[in-house]
Image (cartoon, rainbow over all chains, first blue to last red; front, side, top):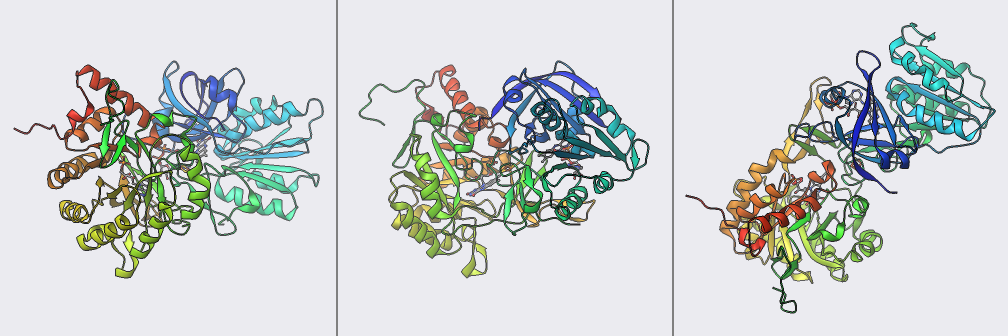
Length: 261
Length: 313
Ligand SMILES: Cc1cc2nc3c(=O)[nH]c(=O)nc-3n(C[C@H](O)[C@H](O)[C@H](O)COP(=O)(O)OP(=O)(O)OC[C@H]3O[C@@H](n4cnc5c(N)ncnc54)[C@H](O)[C@@H]3O)c2cc1C
Ligand SMILES: Cc1cc2nc3c(=O)[nH]c(=O)nc-3n(C[C@H](O)[C@H](O)[C@H](O)COP(=O)(O)O)c2cc1C
Ligand code: FES
C-alpha cells in the first residue's frame, strides 16, 4: 500500500458548531489513494510541542484531490488545528490503515458523535456502487442538534435514507442511535458499519451479534507513528492477543475485539 | 578508507564503526523504524548509513498491555514491552527484504538472561545479511532480581563478552542512561571487547492522567524519548567519548542535521534517528541531505573532521 507525506493546502474551514470543525484540503496524492475507513496523521504545528501527529478519519475524499476531516476540539492539538486558516499548509501522512470492506448487499451505517466522520466517505462510496436502488440506511447520533444537523445534507446526497437520534432530543429521536438500530427491520445479509464512542460500539457489537449481522467497527487508540513502526497503538482482541489499530485496523470485525462495558 | 576507490565521494560522509564502514553516519534507531519496509514508499531507504531494526529476542514477545504510549512536553513515553516476532521469524520473514536493500543491517538484540543473549547471537551468526549487532542492555536480568544488565558494570561486561564471543560481526553495546555514571558502564563494555557503544536509550519516566487518577501508561513507567532528552544525551555522549577509545554512536532527540552535527562535535562518530521518524518519516534521509550540504558549505574534506571537534575554552 502506497502512502504519502504531503504538504496540503487548507482550502476551506467550516465551524460546524462551537467546537466541531471541518477542514478541506487540496491533497492530491492522499485523496486519490484513500479508501473509506482509512485515516491520516496530521502535524498540527511546526514546532517540537506538541510533538506527535494527530490521527483523523478520512471524512471525504475525491479523485480530484479534495480531502476532508471532521473533528472536535478536545485538547491542545485539535485546538491548534481548529485555529488554522484557509490558505495555510499542513503536513499530512496517509492514507493509513485498513478501511471498511465494501459490500453490494444491504447496509446499515451507524455513526455516533465524532464517529460520524468516516461514515460520509463510506456512504458516498457505497452509494456510488449501487446506482438506482439503494438498499441501506444511515443512522447518525449526537449529543445535540448541532452535532448532527450541519452534516445532514451531505449524507442525504449519498442517496441513503438518514435517521437521527440526539441525547437531548433537540434533533431527530431522543436517545441513542443504538435504540433506533434495535427497532429497525434489517435483512439477514445486511452489513453493519459502526464508528462512535466505545460504549456505543460495544453495544452495537452485541446487538449485531444477537441478530447475526456482520458488524465492522472503526476503533481508536493512542498513536505515535500511524504506520506500524512504533507498536504503540495496541488494543486487546477477543482472543487475548494484541492487535495494532494503525496496521490491523482501524476497522475491525466487531466480533474480533474485546469490549468493556 | 576504501582503498579500491581512490576518489572519495563528494561530499565525503563516510565513517567507520570499528571494522564496519558506512556511506554516511546516519542510522535509524531500534524500535522507531519497524523492520524498515514500513517506510519504503515514504523515503529512499538506500540512502541510509545503516538500518537498525526493532529489538529481537530469542522467542516472540507480545509486549505490554495498552495504553503503551503517551505524549509529553517535546517528547513521548513508551512502554511497548519489547514486542517482537522472535529471532526465527525475524530471520525467515524480515531479513530477506532487508538483505536486498544494499544498506548495512544492524540487528538490535535483547534478552533476560546471559544465555538468551548468547543463543540469539549464535542464531544471527548464521546470516550473511547482518552487518553488526547492537546489544540492548537496558533489559532486566531475570536471574538477578530484574536489575537491568546495563546498570551494573559487571553484568554489562558479561553480556558484551558472550555476544562478542559468538558474533561473526562487529558488536555495538547500547547504553542505558538510567545509571549514576554512564562512563563506568562504557569502560566496562569497552574492556569486554565491544567494537562501539551507542547511547542513549530512553530515560525512565512516568505520566499521570489526573482526570482518571491513574498512570497514563498501563505499565506505569515508560521510556522518555524525543527532543526533550537531547541535552541529557549530548552530555552523556560527550562524557563517554572522552572516556573510551572505541567509536560512540549518539542517540537522543535528533530531528535535524544540526542536531546530528552537534552530537558529532560532542564526540559521536555516527548518530541514530528515533522518535523523529514518527513525526517525519523522511527525517533520517533529510539528515543525510543536511549534513552533506553542511560539509560542502563549510568546505570540509570529510564529515570525519567534525567528530569530537568541539572547542572548549
Ligand atoms: C484512527 C483514529 C481516527 C480518529 N478520527 C477522528 C475524527 O475523525 N475526528 C475527531 O474529532 N477525532 C478523531 N480521532 C481522535 C483524535 O485523534 C483525538 O481527538 C486527538 O488526537 C486529540 O488531540 P489533542 O491534542 O487535541 O488532545 P490531547 O492533548 O492529546 O488530549 C487532550 C485531552 O483530550 C482527551 N482525548 C484524547 N483523544 C480523545 C478522543 N478521541 N476523544 C475525546 N477525548 C480525547 C485526552 O484524554 C486528554 O484529556 C481519531 C483517532 C484515531 C486513533
Ligand atoms: C516506541 C519506541 C520503541 C523503542 N524500542 C527500542 C528497542 O526495541 N530496542 C532499543 O534498544 N531501543 C528502543 N527504543 C529506544 C530508541 O532506539 C532510542 O534509543 C531512544 O528513543 C532515544 O532516541 P530518540 O529521542 O531519537 O527517540 C525505542 C524507542 C521508542 C520511542
Ligand atoms: S501508531 Fe505506531 S504502530 Fe500503530
